[in-house]
Image (cartoon, rainbow, N blue to C red; front, top):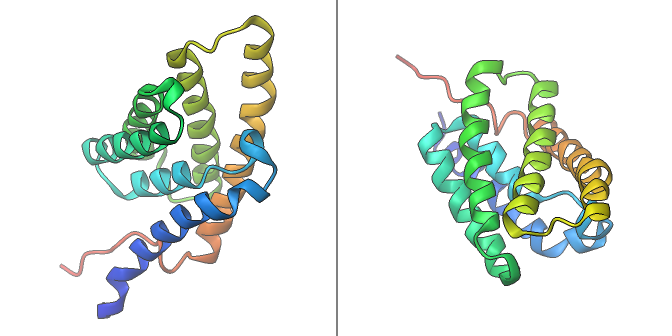
Length: 165
C-alpha cells in the first residue's frame, strides 16, 4: 500500500461535506436534493463497526441539528439510529454489491426522514403522507443515485482494505 492511499478515504468524505454546503442548494431544494452528509455517514458505516457508526451518526446529527435548531435533537437521534443499524445491516446483507449499497442509501435516507418527522413532532395529517410517500422517496432516490455514482467513480479508493497477513 502506498503512503497516499490512506488519504483517499478522508478526501472523499471531505468532498461530500463540501458538496453538502455548496452544491446541494442548486440540486432541487431541500426535499429532493441528495443528502451528502448522510451519504458520507452511510459510506462510513459500510467500513466501520456499529458502535463507531452510531457515534459518527450522532456527530453528523448534531451538525445537522445545529443548522436547524427548531427540532434540535431529532437529527442526532435519527442519524445515530441509522448509523448503527446500517452498519449492522451490511453484515447481514453482504454489502459488497453496488445495488445493495444503493438500496442501503435509499433506505437510510427514508428511515432518517421518518425518525426526524416522528421525533420533531412535525406530524400533520396531510403533510405526513406527502413527506413519507413523495418527498422522502425522492430524496432517497437522489441520494442513492449520487451514492452509487460516488461508489462507481471512486471504486478503487473506497474498496475495502484487505489485510496482508
